[in-house]
Image 1 (cartoon, rainbow, N blue to C red):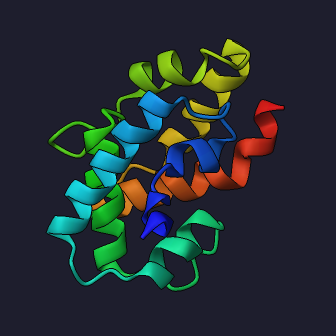
Image 2: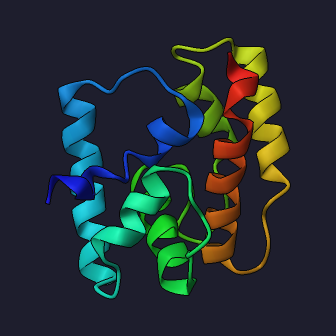
Image 3: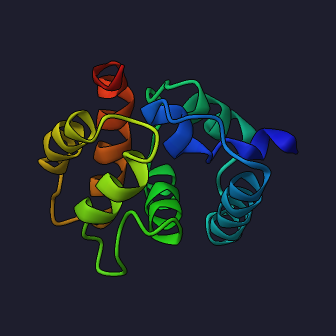
Length: 133
């Protein structure tokens, strides 16, 4: 079940530096907690997410992503993306101006449905991660 470590999504999606053991354990905890709430997901869904393949994303997957982003404090309980926190966390190992531009670009993904917002943000970060290089 180590494939369930997929929700190190933020690191994968935005090309962050390798995670420390402590960060990995936290991400693992977030993932397992969210999987408890979204039992319909299977390994295939998570492997596809890890690999940046969003072709089979459904509502359950989108809400899993919302849960994960909320657990990681990148989204609040109301489903609003936490831009300042994202910039703070992501600019630890990246040029802050590039991170700000990326967060601003991917912030335009917010919609009324918080699951959809989470999905669009993760998809945007994945698509635009090269801009951090």
